[in-house]
Amino acid sequence: MTTAPIRSGQRSLARLTIPVLAALFSAASAAPAAAQGFGFGGQAVGGISIDAHGIVRNLDPEASQELHARRRELLARAGAPSGGAAPLRKVSLAGLCRSLAECSAQGRPLQPDVLFLGGLERVTHVFVDPDGHDIVLAGPADVPTIDPAGNVVAAASGRPLLQLEDLIVALRAIESARPTGIRCSIDPSPEGVVKLQRYLGSLKSIGANPEATLRAMENVLGPQKVTVGGVPSDSRMAGVLVAADYRLKRIGMGLEASGVAALPSYLSMVPAGATSGASLPRFWLEAEYDPIVRDADELAWQITGRRMKCLTESDVAAAGGLARGTAPTDKVAEAWCGALTANYDALCRKQPVFAELVNCVDLAVVAALISGRQLDDRAGLDLTPLRDATKLALPTYQSPDTLATVAVGFKRGNRWIVSASGGIQFQPWAFAANTSESGESTAARGVALAGRPADGWYWD
Figure: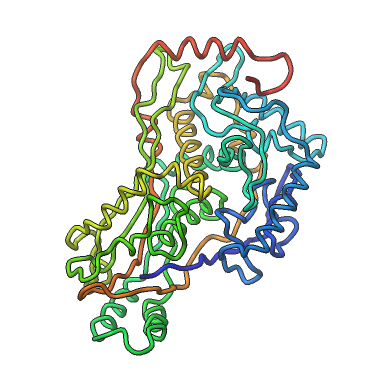
């Protein structure tokens, strides 16, 4: 079985028209000052750090503690957003754009309320306000805090907060994501799979030195390819996709514990003496939503029933590489995916990167709604400050390219179990098109807009 640290790095920032609290969320390792992140984002996504050579690996405990202490200190210095927890906070996109413009004009850094969208944990409602020339995002919210691993999370729930950087990426990339959705995949090269299959076929036993056999597997399979689609591969959102995929493989292959008692590793579930298990099980995550509820005028939208599912198929080695999904069904792999799906919320609490993935899915769905239904035109709202990279440039990160294979395996029955691929995929346009009409959201919109304060761009 294989998994790998992600090869990535950080390129210099081409332009940044708005100064940010960059030092808060740069990686613990050295990085160019101009490219240290768009505020609280930076390189430490999913508990992974980047060293001076651009290789991504898990943060060691000492670095994690240092990152926690530093971010906590700087967050306290910056000051938390006003207000505490709220079941339905409303965030004005018009007000957000004005705040960005004011910070740029005055040379002020972006504060936590801007970087974390008023403390939103997720978006459950979208309200269009033609009279106020605005679009309002609403959902549960809280003040940010720093968890022991250095992640920025909601103080009460411990869930990662939505990030401005991801919203901007979603709005800018959503049209390019229309044909194929947003996705990430980590796969071996076809040549490497053929070589690995030949090597495994030559083995009669793991030998007297199992570690030597495993290292030989790594060398034979070679580097794995990371592919990102639908969003720029050098964006923070792409980093979240890759980090979640990386964690999915490590948990499945028993390289790290899920932290959830009901979710052991896939390998631990394979019975001894099994002869029908597939050699190359593939796991990936997909999103699902219930139909989005809208009013008759399409001015009020409610996003409900979002869930993540783990799916699997079994690959076999063919003449040209992998023949995807052609092996017999792996019942153990299906059972493991079912356990992950059933315990996904619990996994999010233990592994925040999976909640970060959900946040990215939510923001992509919001972007598809705004773009597909032309909600900004209906509202008379100019979203150029968010959509135009010449007005507001985001930091760029080294695009993930390859993964150095790490083999940790054993033989069950007469088959070697080798995990060689995985992925993340979802189609926000399909979710945005699946709607149902209800008058209930009209009342919620009225209450939300009536509560708008004279000052400030978010309210409860």
